[in-house]
Length: 74
Length: 439
Image 1 (cartoon, each protein chain N blue to C red):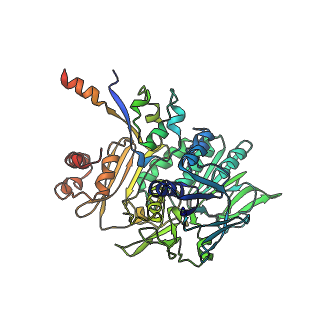
Image 2: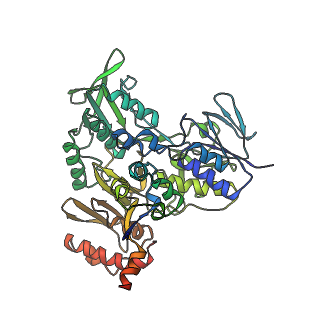
Image 3: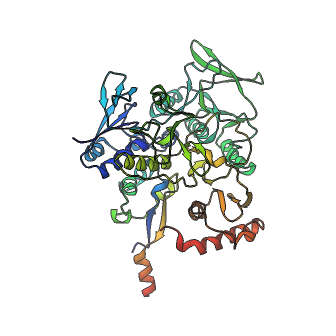
């Protein structure tokens, strides 16, 4: 199960496309950030390439709510 | 009859205004006139194109299909004249565009100093995609480059040229990098990284003249009479709002086009937004310029809504920018100025804000941990500015705390007690304000 998801803070984004360029799955991360769409629903593997390479600190990992629920449940 | 909107400027303010107008006016006839023969692109991203981190195609974030979907016509052309009485915009190619509402989102252009030799081939600014293409082309054969200027743009130039294998010399008028905004330690961190990248720093020097041979730059002569041979001279001493169009039309202008907080100009049917707008702050009675992407987007959003009939006002938040300077992720928020005079910039550079230099009744406290650096500018009852270098864990909550003017009365003593207490005090403040922070 994926324990983390990638979330964005669009106000920091300058649309340089570094995230999209480096996504191994070809997810248009930049486009999703701009449109306010969840990155986690794009088939994202949470490999972290976009998080590590974004020069503006737009993206970060957050613990997935699903995981939180599971953890609490256990 | 659908209302005609003409937007001059195909940058973030212009395009966001078009989106805003379309949201509020489904039948509007919207046209964007842009001077560059490219689709919309990320100007801040040019730095990463120059270093080779991304290909050019990555910069085009809004393909023409997006314009079609939005129902916006994009015209490549240069605005020549506004005929205010007739409500017409005339382009240099003779096209005449009638408007009901006009938005001037024409941005700013890089300025060149009046130094002799600035017209030589090999002398360049770093202002546009065309500039960037030209620089990349030159780096294929250039052996050595000089960079003059300050702020983020000069640094991006130096790093980009070095990344492309060109021996790069950075000529600073001041004794350290960006001394008006960064403190001595912050400048030193950046300079150390530049030196690691092989960039040679020259301090307290000015360009006396640019020496050319057969129309091409071959060296820069400094005021010390020392010469640095070079094939490229890249200049980043600031940008100047493009006010000529408004000025010629008799509108009120200063450094930029004068606006109020609703982006009205002195003409009731003409609005201005983005880097060109010099907005009056009703609280301070002062006018100010900004050259930040996120600010331009917010300007555009509100200006567009108001053009379509809304009555929104821009609430100037503490400006912030996060970017890599000298390879170190750095966030600047609010009033962080050091009080030192501007050495390397004649005007505001891109990614810059006048507000960073504001001197409020406050003092700075610093905490360093390894490569991570935190500087808070603490006022009487709130934090007015911050610089976060390296670890960015504090940057997001600080952005909220500074923008929302969160009261720090209960924790102020800890924040100012010294470096050891600063991080803990801040962590306590963040924990308490956590429930207020946006998700």
